[in-house]
Image (cartoon, rainbow, N blue to C red; front, side, top):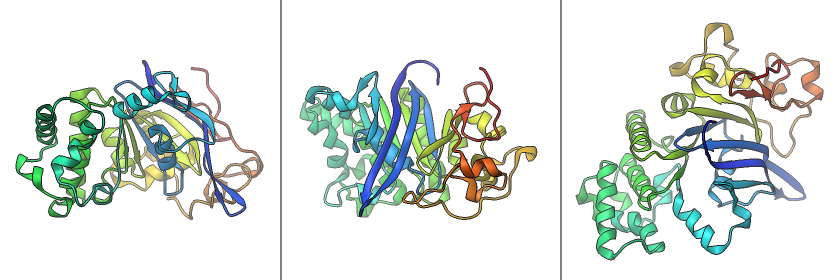
Length: 320
């Protein structure tokens, strides 16, 4: 990361009780997001990326560690500072149909944040709704529509408009295109890129798809079983992935192939249960390159080049 950190996770862990056991959804994650940056958090289902996103949004309280917004810890914010945080940080969720109230019109949905924070006069709010609907490419005639009257792509445009209405600084977008068909995915990704450039937004993009990462992200953090296993500039990670898990994820996406010399066999097997994680490196049961040390010792994140970190015993630490 370069420049000022808008949001920072420091040693963040989150556990949930499942019966008598603890499910560790996120474990000791530290990551920064710079001003105007798009950071992609990528991994399979069960990797912990959505839980991390909810922690960054302040919707889930970490079990350990802390979230900082411009240096202020979320857990220590007073009521006024917390309200300001909610205005400046907005979510875009995966399924726009379930995240939109089916009883509300598009106008009311987009206006909700303006009403909640008392932003502007009624006339100002109507004008702002019209402005953001135009920005996301929705004709004004849809202002009176209900979610069931819209297509999936149109519903996601409404969700993005609602996130933009309060002029946020940070958006956390959790799988914003995974519920859409391929053509509409491309349209929404292009829209997000245009809005980010136009407003200088900082975005945390949660996804399982490296093709989305390649299209949008400046940097990428790869998560596996609750931990970050690699982080670095997107172009560098795509060109020469340092962790076997990253290699396998990239190799499974035709649109984002790794260099032939670095390609690994396609990813096999399932993510282990976080209720019963394997000893040593959590990826070793699925890793084609695992050796004895991997079965016994968990690797820590080490420098793997300029601006890069990786948690793998095959990575030789470098000095930046």
